[in-house]
Image (cartoon, rainbow, N blue to C red; front, top):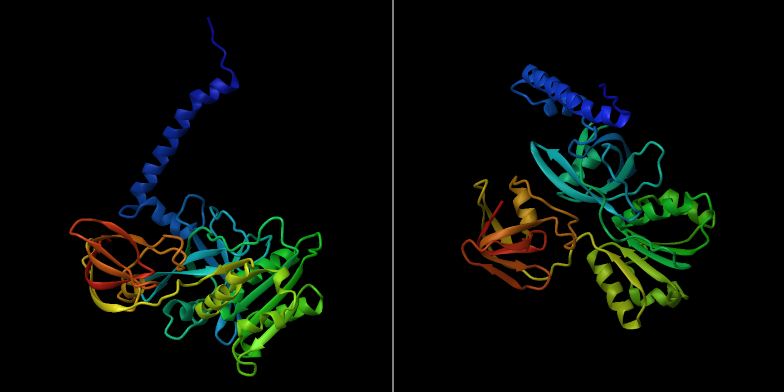
Length: 371
């Protein structure tokens, strides 16, 4: 009696054979590249492949202002996409140390699947200055997946007020580019109030002014060298229909705190994107030790543990660096830390392993971190 295999049953029989052949080939390749591993070789020749740690290759670096640049990056095949307004963690090797920072995604839809971030170099900013002034096309960076909830809702409000200052324009430009790239014209009424040190310091200035000239939005520029700082008490005068608008804002802590203090009592809808949690409390500082790598760092009571550790060359996990994503959480095995937002102490007895956010806590005495 003969047995006829259906295509499905034949495939079932053949699958183990295919796996055996694949495993054999891998063992041969591994023997050929020892002491390296196959993935080490693939990382050199095909670093953006599916299944590899998520990376990106820098395609271009375009100057926006004297101290800001847009990096166009081709991400690995496992990049899952983003919603305009979200941010991405970027890992950069600087002088042999991998440092992670978070930047808003600034691109609209692209047929080449590339993404972009726009970075403003800040004084003494190790990573920001490296990205703006030193990186070149072809270099690789590490990537996280897109995160964040500073995104426009669906359906869209018919009237929007976007308040930005300095590099706070970066998540908003992604929103605008997405809206204006749609095949169906976007009909909402948008007012963009942007503050910068001077006209020359306005990131994406030419693009924003072009949008205004085309009637896509109303642009109000405030240049602090001539107009001074924005006083939120003047908002109702600057934007007479303020009460009818949903406000999205991103910028320095002082601006966002002022907007929150202005809008909340009036019951006006407000959505904020904070690049950093507001820091108000400091302590005496102390010794910060890391159990697993043996590093000991002297830290003051005003510097977040995340920053103190990275400045000493410790590779730290970190998320959005806004105190809300919990990507930087580590166990405090022993000691005390102080929350820089409100001064509250968190104390751990030996071996406790109390979870703390390293981006918003500073040492308050000797501390031992499980890392």
